[in-house]
Image (cartoon, rainbow, N blue to C red):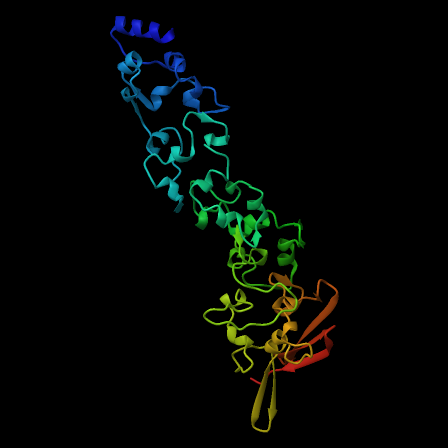
Length: 359
């Protein structure tokens, strides 16, 4: 009815301009679904159809859909909205086509906040491989629970890599500033541990150096192989087999685990002289292979038995408790003058033992 009256009036007046008031009524007769969404876009809710649509008169007379021209480009959106692709790192979705905005947003209205076509993270998985986010030996609870990707990533552009909304440590510590209970264990307050430890791992605040943020084929979201058992058989690895502690050797030299070493291989060694002969015993090798034990190589000690990968109350990232807190561990540096030449270790495995280096 409104459409018929408007057509008669516009013909009589010899004018064709669709004012907002008329648009809200005229367009609504056929396109009512564009006005009823729970989350509405302001122009469509206010009948400002001509902001984005140019309509020829024959569209109303013959219902010809070709008589409507629609501005779909991002530039049309930027007539009102702040431009979203100006930061250093831009979401590729914004660069895939001219109508990039409406790939994710419904320009009239929808069921979800910010006019999204689907809720997050479902929308993101239209382009991203969902398996890489939700499947693995370990999956980050924030992804397995279907939390919004926007908790960590800016969906348009960011000054930070990976479209992050904050620096990695700030994002991670927004949750890991307290104990986190999982089905398998209680993750300690990592932020507090780093802030209060005597020695802190150099990469402790670069979480993604060791952890995959979404899911991993390894335990505890680790990005490479690392045995989380206290005891395990040490495998040095080759081109086809991963080292038992491959994660550590992203930075550390794998030679520190060799039986035969030189002065540069490791500082955790016991040097002695037999006449002119200099003997070096690699104490890392002794521990990880259980070389001096009677229980065999399957009882090799993991790096984590003595070292905490985040931070520790003693020098060299050395823990003060081992084996889930059931055994005490004390370490003292041995000095000659101002130079550190060795150390003394006392723990439940053995009585106090010392080592010194001859450099």
